[in-house]
Length: 490
Image (cartoon, rainbow, N blue to C red):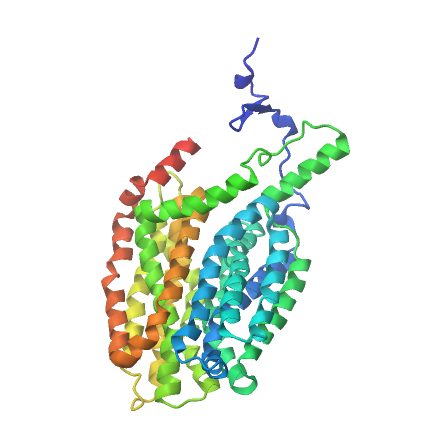
């Protein structure tokens, strides 16, 4: 009698040694109207735009807060500006935690229900801040608002990937990132004028209105997560035919609790044990923290030293925004440069280290912009010069964030989500803590030397991307997680 494990008509599935007949496997047909990648182009474009808008609102809410710090401090008679800045910290901590937890839940229940609940709660949690009677209400509400906003940060790129094919994925992600990459800069630009003319509470009312629009968009966005759709398709097929033999390859995944546990523990384990994660988390975390220190430094330089109004001072971020936009627009050119890199003999595609070329360029541009800003910050220098310093600084940041992400995703493939989740925890954690020291640092050292110190730290870290560009292949070969991945796939 033929061994069923060797039968081509049966497949071994999962740890429970459950055999499934491949003739009854539910997959996507060549032309399948339920497959997100076959939906009309206009609707897929609408999904990308909706995800970009919703993510941008979350990021804007994070940094817009800094525009109203002075108003909150005066209204509640808070002696220290540092206490008010904790609202930025708690929001970033919430983003770090929410991006890991809620993205895990989306793998269990699908993306759409998590989006609907999270966007609704994110919007509602702006109400306690807008109506706050004390600073404690603001700090707590912004933490939980960040927690639910983390869904868009972590899962929106996945939705964009769900609806685009390999050929157009980079273009779609670039369109998505155009708003989200500029979100940290748009926050203080918009917030400066809102605070100046309407007061700090209207910063939250504006976000509430925009989150209402975001919620309407989410109602119009269908489920895009392929495992969830295939599981639903399987249930429908079983019900329609009355045959329980229909199955899909996502039927016997881990339980919800196991998925959540794995997605919480694995990012932390990789962050402390994987050499790639350790150094890239350090580098990207410091770069991101210095970017957020700008939201402390720019008001000091333009409002304090130059006497600009909050609205006008907000426009000083246009240099950084322009540089970030250039990084996104340059994506097709950089993609061609990456394609010229020698291909990996196994995958027949450029090795992950090809993307590090852009990070190397960015690592040089960032301290150039920081030095430039530091020594043109004094009022005796024309205001256009420190604003123009933001262009190389923003361009460098954009290149680092976009292509460091590409490198980590390309290196870990199936473990990419865990690697990037760990990176988010470190990035938002450092970005939430370091700006608390910014006010004291700039008042003690002055804008010139405080900025110079930050630029020197960034110069010291420049070798990290260059080392990975040259030796990244050897480092990947010694990675325990990558070795485990290759063993599992074989």
